[in-house]
Image (cartoon, rainbow, N blue to C red; front, top):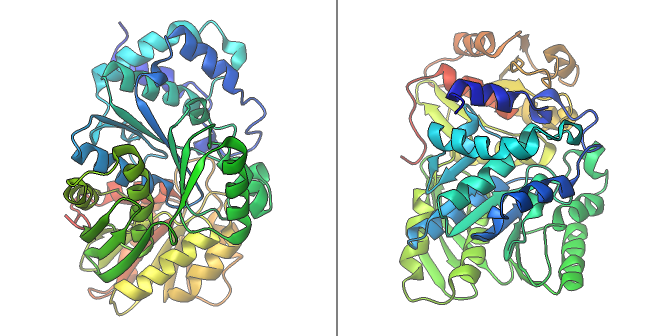
Length: 438
């Protein structure tokens, strides 16, 4: 049996578009090659009930809230999300525990005999990890598995599952070179996860995206619930420790819910997860306590996470114009500080222009940097989009964080954002953390 390090080396041998960039992505995507491997493994992805979530922003949060609610109901729940902040183990969880070394070795060992004889198939890092997750959940006898789409939906490796319930978080512009330049095109790619006879729960959407989702549901004979219409919520209060809110679903009312996840948009993500879980769990008088307990337990690193108080350090992955606008709104509504130092780094294929236009006016000082991945944009390129603020350019995240600290007073705020790779490195550099909501 291979060692743990040998297993990691093997996994790292597959092309990783997440780290290298999206140039050429999609040309080799073929879900049939994944189905062929799963067939040889005995179709492990059919051993549990599946939930599938796509969208541009918030899909990871919807998945985490869904998984936590199902776990609170007493089920064994697999969760597959991406990207990771520190270790790829974070992507594969059962009841919120990362996959262990022995389980990873065992799952990869079973896969290799079907993947290695077919080098011409060109499996990617994401595809292999998706297969590992599906096999691991079967081996651990999960009752449910919740899968987050990596990118798009139609050709995403996760789309080999036939989920009985799917969620669509808000659709906006991202990966436009791959998914298309119009909202309708992007929504078509993402709504392709809706399968025959399934139930779909959609977060609030732009009108053009909602038309596509409705049409896809009609074509597949799938039922549809909409947050804002069939599932409604009211925010009672919010602050640096989270939000208190009430939700009215199709099967019940869930009052006094609380999440330590910051930002009012997380309440909408909760409502989407509640809609998904109502369909899975049915009408039960114990659901109110189950849902409330599941929501309160959720914590996702890197999503409006407070790392330190003096100075205040917050990290968040804001990679497109819409997510940057959400972040700006949340910072303005929630936090109190004297000056804001923005530590920003983005991937070169992201919406650099609109992220800068949204976040630069919020900052008193801007520090640009780059994560240690080939996909990272040159900080000097980013600087070209910022015209009206003091800007410092640094070559790596450690230097960038040091510069931000040198500029920040005790009552100031350092907001580190942009790519998940950058905020992951920031999180590793700050060992003593104050976990949001915990």
